[in-house]
Image (cartoon, rainbow, N blue to C red; front, side, top):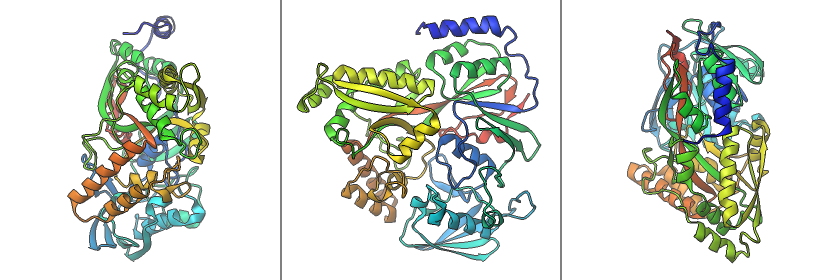
Amino acid sequence: MVRSPFLRALVLSCLVLFLAACSRPEHDSLRLGLANGVTTLDPRFATDAVSSRVNRLLYQRLADFDDRQQPVPALARWERLAPTHYRFRLIEPRPRYDDGHLLDAEDVRATYMSVLDPATASPHRGSLKLIREIRVLDERTLDFLLDRPDPLFPGYLTLGILPARGLAEGRDFNRRPEGTGPFRLLARPDAGRVVLERRRDGQRVEILAVKDATVRVLKLLRGELDLVQNDLPAELLAWLAHRKGVRILHHPGSNFAYIGFSLEDPVTSDRRVRLAVAKAIDRAAIVRHLLAGRARLAGGMLPPEHWAGHPDLHGIDYDPEGAKRLLAELGHSPAHPLPLVYKTSNNAQRIRIATVLRDFLNRVGFDVAIRSYDWGTFYGDIKAGRFQMYTLAWVGIKSPDIFRYVFHSRSIPPAGANRGRYRNPEVDRLIEAAAVAEDFATRQRLYRRIQEILLEDLPYVPLWYEDQVAVVRDDVAGYRLGADGNYDALAEVHRR
């Protein structure tokens, strides 16, 4: 156990300032504390983890996924009438919008047509461009016609359904969301606070951004928060394990943490540089010490239990001498280091990880400069391609079509999320072949081959799959964690 000034200060703060810790809260809302706030409440634009998870509370979707990441009906069932023709039929009873009208096929069509409209500039357009036409047959039935076969297509239809009327009026759904999910928006007083009302019983739930992990935990103990989720350092979790009045929930996670590179940068476009980065990092030590063992080493984007995952891939082994040899080929060493600029968010845990990564890299012959920014600035830079190297995590990956969205040469922004400008014709070919393969075993084999090539090319260095962790007050019941870290259990959580 690491004894640090941080930990001693935390204990002292609790003794001095929070003698009444774990007293019952005086508010009626249930409050979830997070490191980051909501960016958008419009599902057409939600790409960050918090926004995507909160949008699941406000809106319903045609399809969702089971534990094996296979698509299952949510609002609708479907049948494949032809390789490029799917028919969806909304399940009764259909939910109602707040104005009283039942969600219907026209709402579905209008939502997806809005995303497909280039003027909307939705980041989800790239993965849905295969939709050639949407035909409404009646209020419950509609057909999707595709420009190419894709057996995975139902799994793409996970966007929250907006009302056609609001879309036609040009409503700002970020400010005035209107969905049919288990919650409605009551207030959004500032960027760090969202107040929701649970439809079935009127229970208020507040989602608050509290960037500092120590402050977040102290608010939990004081009763100003009822639960906190993720972004807590190992020593803080170890300390909380011995506190009365709270309990720690844990679930193996699927969120994929990685190092990304610009492949148009004159330095990081060299595979030897990327491989040296990968070999220089002792991932197991980071998981053990910084993440308290609450992560699994990753070999690819999809975890091994995913049907398209690759259980034989384990990432790049720690090999600092090998990293030094690669850098020596480029004329660099600890005495003559290679400069790199590494971007990350200003979240305390991410900065700690960045600092450790920098130390590993500098030992072998890099000279890493860390640039940390508030989340909005950092994420904006990554989406715009303004980076040399960065760390992030893909959250809630369900469909293996993520490979098209992230690595296909035609998915360079704004068409997709190929932010590093990776181009490999063989990967393009395999992505396209996997999308049309009718046989399950063939699709699985092709997706595994894609992951093998990606591990060889290293547009990303796989790090780990972070576990999901929540700390909950003992007077709160019904909260559970999923592998992707969603907040769906807020629909059932209650105070004892």
